[in-house]
Amino acid sequence: MIAGDELERVDQEICDRYPYPLVATYDRAQFQAPDPVEAHEYLLDLFEVTLKYCATIALAQYFHDHTGDARINAELAEIQRPSLGHWNGWLRDILGLYRRSGRAMAIPELDSFYRMRHQGAVLAATQSLSSAMAAMGYRAGAGDATSVTTQQFFDLLIGYRNRLAHGARPSPHDRAIAAGLLAPALRELYLHMSALAEYRLVYVRSVTLEFDPQGAHRYRHVVTHLTGQSPRAAPNPVLLADAYPDKQLYLLDRASEFRPLLSVHPFLIFAHCGSCNREQTFLLNMSDANSQDYIGYQCTHHFSPTEYLDYMQRLLTELGVPLATAPLQVSESAQRNGGSASLDVEAAPLPPPPPPPEPVLAPEPRSARSPAPPPAPSPGAASRRTRWAWLVAVAAGLVVLVVVVAVLLGRSPSPGPAQPSHAPSLAPVAADLSGLRQQYRQAAGRRNAATSVWVSQVDSLLQQGADTPSNESGYDSTYAEAIQAFDNALLTMPFPGAMSSDVHGLTNADAALIGDLRSAGQGLTTSQFTGDEARAQSAINNLQNDLGLAPSTPFVQPT
Image (cartoon, rainbow, N blue to C red):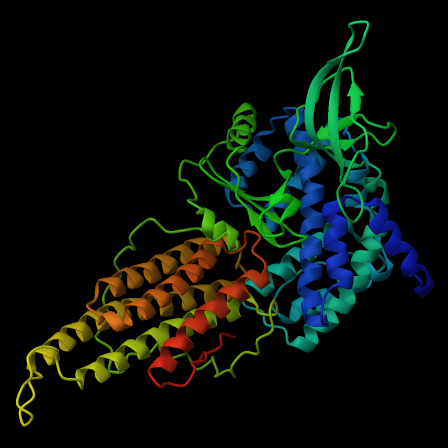
């Protein structure tokens, strides 16, 4: 354990000497959280960026050496949609490959850190979180009684993160307790990463050729140092006999003033963040043949460049990594709002259920489910299964809203020539509303059936302990397609013009939820999910306020 009087010194050393993407996220997690619940989310982000930074070093070495191991190449095919488990697997397997083969690594301290045994706060956090996860139905080893390795700690936190993303809902009190364990554990872990911090991170902004008066040439490198709490441009260019490719991040030799050891491009990049209006570091989030998405953990913003696609494809092709043929189709606007992938396919038709009674409601919850109170607006505190409750709420809100609109409109006289006051002409309107109701019943019934099937599928995975992103992705994709099909059908229905903008507002909110389903487990932060939930709930409440209805809340909360 780090003694109380040493905390300030340790934090200062970390903030002064460590790489900027780690320092900025460390500062956010340890010092900027407004409350313990939010700190819980920030600390998990800190774990993610730490794991990915270490894995990026291993990947850079692997690609630099053109190692070409068949097993690792097969795993790298998952770079299209990598989960935390994939990042940890690449780190573990590349380090193991170099260790078994006796190959030298540019940064040998990485393997030592990954296998390092910890006691103190890291061990305490591991043991306590292991007990908490056992209560969630997760069986994980916590090492022996006296120490735990970095790898074991990473494995446990990945399992914990996945549990939160796939149904576990610890209370605010439990999250605060977990934050109280994670904060000192990650501080202690960072203290043991000091050897890695000696390999400074720099960005080569530009390279030009210069000649001295004697005609000898040297290459002028304009660089930015990414050490400490903010990027810092070097006051003078670096003159070298050899030219290093520009617009890339490098790790420098610890024993030299300026000798790049490894380029970490294009897994870690340095670019202008439009949301921050400043340059930030971004870690690869997903990559396919047509698009890429990066996330800056220190600011939580996404960046979707196109200039690195060919470089990435060349790296993978040279190693013989099997490339996926189906693009992710991540739209630029979706990426800016959390990396959500858009849908360009029509939903596969589902067997139509019997027409639901009026009013149309979401499927009845099973006996194991119980009503939940309206969630408090606590940004960043919602779990993945809370998001599913919002999805059900949105579906139900749509159903109730349109049925009530239909009923209200059915009581109004039809437009057209005035009729005698004793005999208003309502027959044409009644016929139109009847057709609208029937169209809506069919579409809502298919969506409700899809919701019921999806909840049952995810619950089954949870009960089996098999709720991994890869296992759930097919269910998520099918459910997203069903929601999209519902929205497509909604937009073809003959709603009165006065309601069109509100219907479009709901379908736009649905689009964000569809993106969340398509992007689950790919680096999306809780705060981004929370924003989508808030926008969807606001759209529902605005429409229901127009109709004189009370704000809607989820009526079932998955367990």
